[in-house]
Image (cartoon, rainbow, N blue to C red; front, side, top):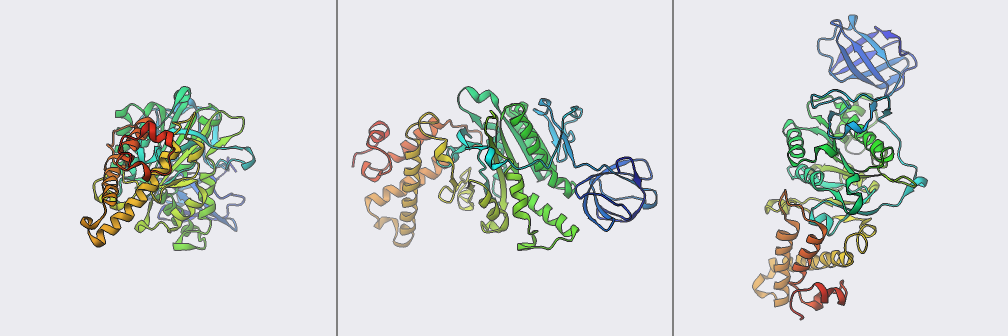
Length: 461
């Protein structure tokens, strides 16, 4: 099949070409089209039935003369050439250079579809990854090998948060030099793509980052390849070169929309909100490629960023993502409207594996108790704030007014921080104690007496 070219195109419209009398072609196979001017276009088979093949053409079907168009089916999936030289490079969604430099030359080419990790071969995620963002490091810490999504909404600064994590994320201790980042932007605007690239270049981290940029005006099928190419690069860096890899992918909602669009073209039966019934398994196929493997030094930690349509956390994309991953960081519109950045709403946020990456030997011995106490105190402070909205702050007790002050300071000083402010975990924990010291000893029931004596700076009662 690789050496055969077909000239049996029957129709072309909207980037799709229908081919007839083409036997034995598998869905997902790569395709090359040679038009009447000799130009080569790339494509992928998205559906086959009764020797009829539906091909999506990356470069579109404009000015395509069907009678003089030759199509070659390459009988192989999309493959990505992998090499250590990928670090510091910028590629498009299908792995071609976007930085004006030569393509990666490597005999090692990997199928971008990959495979999820075998559950029996997985090692448990442990060890702390510092993002430099207090609301994450202090209360929803990220561990090596974890999948921790960021749930956002339209217009919220999730791209800025993602870029800040890429710039600041690091390992503590001797393994810091073995840490690299794979960043994938899916369906990004030209302005966002420029922002990401300039942000990483100016901060000097680009040399330890592999970037995949898929733009909103590029072919929808390439949007489906982008996270797969990124994870293929991450697998090579982690399990062949023993790096600890953080993969940040934004925005997975654009990926799911592309999946729905291709599913409609293929004639798949729609399910919830028009998404295909296999949306869950498709997302799981991606997310489960992250993790740690027994007897392997490297690891893949995944932060998928997704914007929730209409801020609806029950929408299929965040809903299904929550089933597959180990927690979520939720960005809230209320904090954003108050000018607080990053607007992390800490109460619905959760890191299920946090307990295995913090504490003695990882961060600091008081970290687990401090995080628990911050959650409890802030939850009570929000209850007091709700009461004050009903009866008025002047009718509150002195204790309740202290909680109101704590909530305000917590949001402005702990959650809120500069976009270029990189706090280490000790600075985050010291700041937490400064805030907890606004409350009396007897209100802090989740920290030990020794920790109170050592860190509390306020009144005894």
